[in-house]
Amino acid sequence: FNMNEKAGTVDYLQFVLARYDLNGTFLGFSNATNEFEWCSPTLNQVPRWRKFGYGHKRTYDCNLFNVLRYFDEPEFYDLYLVDFSRDGALYPVPVRNRNLRDGGRYPNENTNVDQEADDLLTRRFFFYDQVSSRTSLNGEATVIRYAKNIKLTTTVQDLEPSKILPPLLEILYE
Image 1 (cartoon, rainbow, N blue to C red):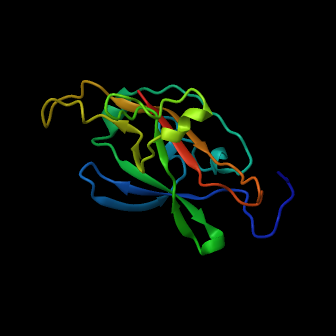
Image 2: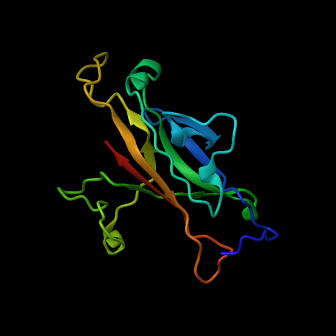
Image 3: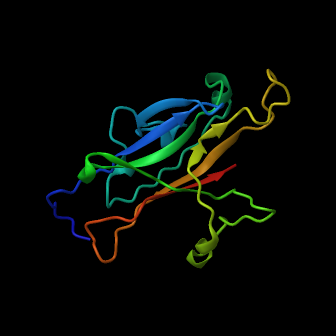
């Protein structure tokens, strides 16, 4: 990896979120800014996780009762990478839901890289769900499911280090 700037490259990766409501109605596109820090957002600055070639890890605590207080329903998202070298084309980012269950097994629960071959990747994800545990239409949520761990991995291509492989978003829910 060469830290010197190269013409036609960018320092920050731009991601776009397609947003959907609980019923699947498309709500529009928005630039991904602080949504991945949904519990403790960074305001008025470019999030460090978007800088290419830069590792970033952030840990924080959430008061999940605020989710119940301020949000009626969860939103669902599809993540896209913006490719400025192709006139802003949108490339879908696959999602590895670590909790995904398929016929009684958890194919995405990997302990090493060799186990990733059978992973089932999806597209749509959410940050919190305070609705699915309700026992009636206007009932209280008995459980809040939330993204406990979010990891976005971008890997440089071996043979062409000025290019990247498709990013991968990995989410572990609790």
